[in-house]
Image 1 (cartoon, one colour):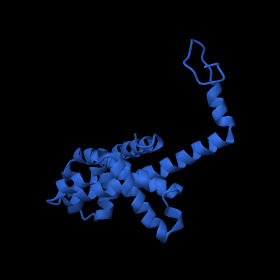
Image 2 (image 1 turned 45 degrees about the vertical axis):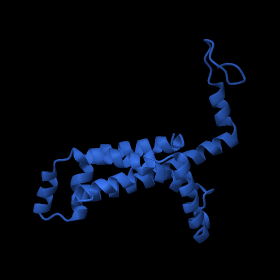
Image 3 (image 1 turned 120 degrees about the vertical axis):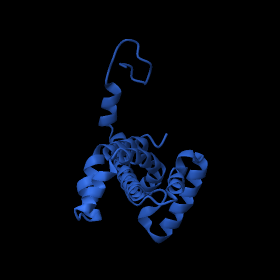
Image 4 (image 1 turned 90 degrees about the vertical axis):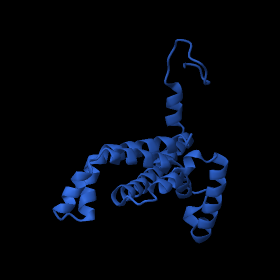
Length: 178
């Protein structure tokens, strides 16, 4: 809006507030810190979700449903319970290391990663469900080891699922997990 204060648009459009956001160093540094935390947390959450989902998909343990339910628990737990749990977890971590406190960027990124990892698990598990297992069995039959199967057969087939999981994790962290 063309007004100096934030108001409802009345037909006139302006980018004045975005310009003020960029020009003010305090707002710009806060925005860059938010981006840094979102990238860190999305990377952590996506890596954890990928490792978990690949383990479930490749090894198919009989208790896979229970593990998935445990991983998805932060999605259904009340935010207050999750916040208290994460607070005490980060306090105990900060006693061992000053860089991972509840009020440091790394601590915030870990807390965000814990809360957004279930969303990434859902997306990557769905992507893995679309893969024909016979491709993996053929690679194993031709002598490919587990690392070769993961990096040359499975990951190329789920790359869009992994990228989508990263993007969703980034957005959820950026907007502070809803």
